[in-house]
Length: 366
View 1 (cartoon, rainbow, N blue to C red):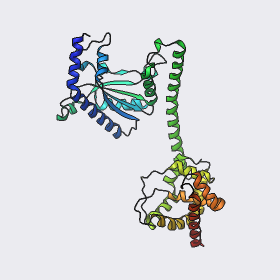
View 2: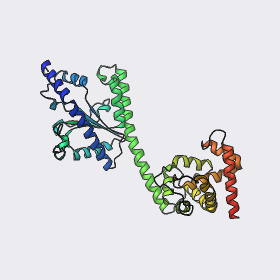
View 3: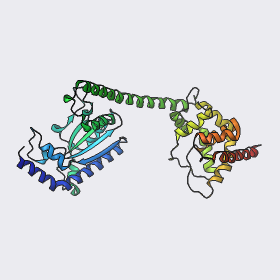
View 4: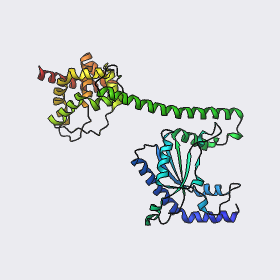
């Protein structure tokens, strides 16, 4: 490209910069909204306007000839990074349905020939706003501009970012380094596939556990984060205890609160509850004590507070009671220390307070 044309295009870029930035923000916002509406979770939806130096370098590349900035299709760019490789196609369908594609400029770089080109496997679409949006007054300054949408998985993105550190062209590298890069590319491809398999297996396991719990077929179900969530969602005992706390004690339960399943599973497993069936049995054995304990503990600790509590709070109380039954106040203090429930030096005092409350609750039942 001759210098005069290059300078003309850079001057045009300077004059259009505000419009490019508006298009960048606008298109990113509506794409993020489309993904949200489709309930498709992605790592990020980012946008950028090519900086002047990058544009200048692109215009100067050998063999490149641009008569107008409209021919530089990535002045404005969006990038969607998905968690899983197969979600790239889901995002692509949304982009194709909501924007107007320019087919001659769209490139599917996932069809690669060389094993060390993993980072180039992203899907590149060149788009413009659909006609209905181009007709809006608000898009008047950039309605006819093109923009690029790159879609790639998080591992493909990681490879591409490392390439930017200077490893983009393995052709000029020594054989051993190229060989290593090929191995890394293969590992990333395997990892992408394995992450999808883990996701699919987890979903299948969740569905299986949900079905077994719904049918009260609890024998052999390991207590873990997945089975715990399914149990508290379906357990009549948990609903009864939550109903008692909410209705009888008039304490607000926030059903949207984080159930903190990892923490509660760790608490339960530390008191030897390692199966869902054991959790149900311990709840059944202690339901009267849990209600009496909640009546004393919850009212005393929430007096003057309007903050709601999380569902299934009685399961944490159950873990405390089981720790106390295992070894008295000392065991409960160790339980608090193990799970970092109290401050340093406060565990024994807190354990004694809890033990006293459990004793009072038991006395109301005798």
